[in-house]
Image (cartoon, rainbow, N blue to C red; front, side):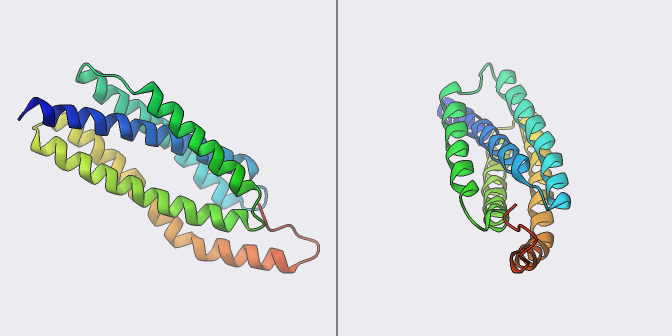
Length: 170
């Protein structure tokens, strides 16, 4: 394959690393504010650990190609996550909007890893393909968990919102 194709794979791996840095920041902020949804908080905390591991695995892929993550992209992703966290914390229905945003973001990640797997496969980068397949499985599992639980989270929010004694936002 051409060096431009390999260079493109480098760019996409750096983008994925920044995406995981952003995801970690978003999830951490969301988990810190969750008070009344212990099942959701537990699953988010589990995914934070997966996300940290994903960033580490991507960094390993980059190092195997004599590359490193993009500090600029990582910082930009973290700033975007901070903005999202601030905006979300002001919503009166934060837990529901956070669930919706997380579900959408998981599918964004899934699409990115599918493209990375195809690129790595095309370039004969078997190690990178396998790393991305493992990460893809974790992202699919998180998206599926959100899909399976968003209805209940929404109903719990509505139930809490109806009660004068219970706060539902978080």
